[in-house]
Image (cartoon, rainbow, N blue to C red; front, side, top):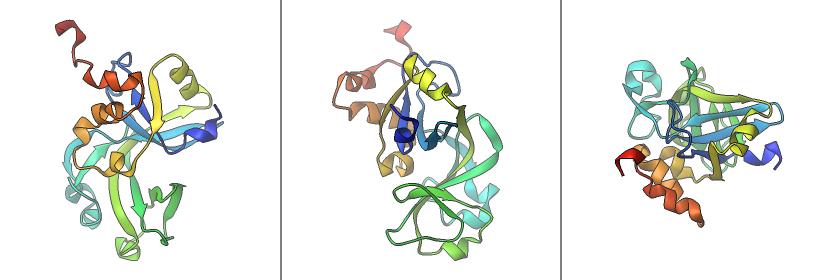
Length: 185
């Protein structure tokens, strides 16, 4: 496995990874190479409306219109992940893969009007130094699976862990029924 092949993939926490903040998390990898990896947890909606933190962007983000907890690193900063329309190359846009990329939140939203199809804003991110993520995958902390656009922008982020596992074509699909507390089983 080469590092560059993981950009655009999902990291799905295995049941062995039972510690906050990554327990049952689903992370979209936005960048991954020999120097490390950067991603955002896409299934942790915060109880904070975007309108209260970044009011200029409140009409640009899609439902549920809240900030998401992107990871434990840099939680005082925000990353905007967006899907742009097919032919768009708006100012402040950095492609990560396909039509998914990062939007510079310092760019006035009016300059991006008509270019953004869907967008979410994340407080913080998840990051790994070179080789660290590969080591965690080898140790069994993460499953690496293909992403779908609705994984990032879907209306029900709280059930994403189970949905992503369920759609896999191997034994991983059975883990979607893994109990929240195996000792109660």
